[in-house]
Length: 173
Image (cartoon, rainbow, N blue to C red; front, side, top):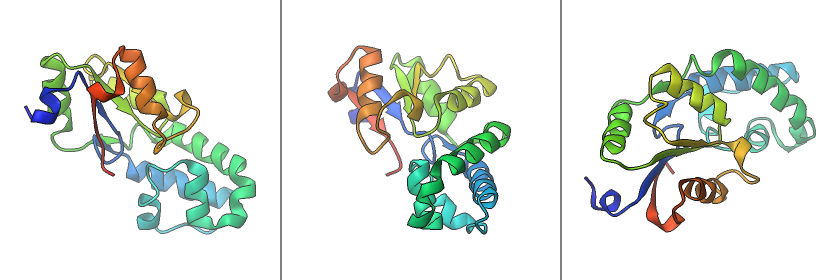
């Protein structure tokens, strides 16, 4: 066990590009929503660079600030499409499931803190038989401010009944 983890009381993970890859679904949903607004599709690589950001910020990066006035409509189209495709297009990265199981079996509380909706991550965990391995999921719908604000980490630590300083957070950025 890595020394940073050995002294921790819980291990919290980011989801996208740390545990799993949902980029295929995100590209489909982003371009669906952009198209519904009458905007041309964005390049897949540009969309992938926005993964982990909140949707209004991603919209501004991909379409420009002038599209911010339609962010509610964009959000609605994105979420509707995500309901159809996101869970099925998400797969765990190599080694991620093993790491989750090793930590769980070693007695560490394991959590996920993500800018995705909680139910989407829970559905992926359920699909792959990991719901009992991950103790909690804190999604964007659980906090007033998304990452990079610390709200998700603070909430996860609070639910686990430990201080943030006793947690290790593993993420891609």
